Image (cartoon, rainbow, N blue to C red; front, side, top):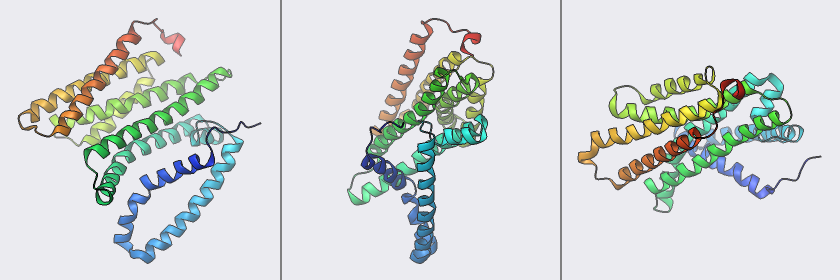
Length: 274
């Protein structure tokens, strides 16, 4: 028998509306500019039909497979763990990449309607996006933990998921550092760093993946702050830039502290973690 959700339908509907406003709604202006009102109306009706069917499918799946993993669990149950992993990674990447684009649109809307925009709105949206990312990654982690508790552990996928989650801070820090020092596209650096960090799931144990990637992120963030001050320090008169540098440095210190604290705990050997 299904447990009654702690979230009522207004909160669940609010989550759906927020996702639409932050994502699809921000792209309507491009559709209006390219096709006009009539074509945009037809496209909106078609998408409404598609979203309605999707909502009905998700409603059926969520009752048949009640789990915090969402589409990750649905794909894994139908096509196996590898396809489920790919779906989970795709969702995480979509939320990660879409956060920056949505922040730009929301800043433009709030500035035009309320006269409030710029860095305060971007920082607030960054914090909200960080919370959403934490919820997404926690959902998959909870699902993997439940499999382990039920006697069906997936140690390989636990290592892969942890490596991918911590690959994103490494990749973003590396791309920010490369943008300051190297004449290469930051997106290319992000992709290479993501693949390299995710590949640590193959040789490293579960505890070592989290520990070493956190340490790498802390080092890259500290180097990014130093590089930014070295390159732009003489002309750095924007308070927001100083705020970002301080935030990155604090994040590096927090990660370094967590690594130090974890390193003083009991040693987890590779055979035990796997």
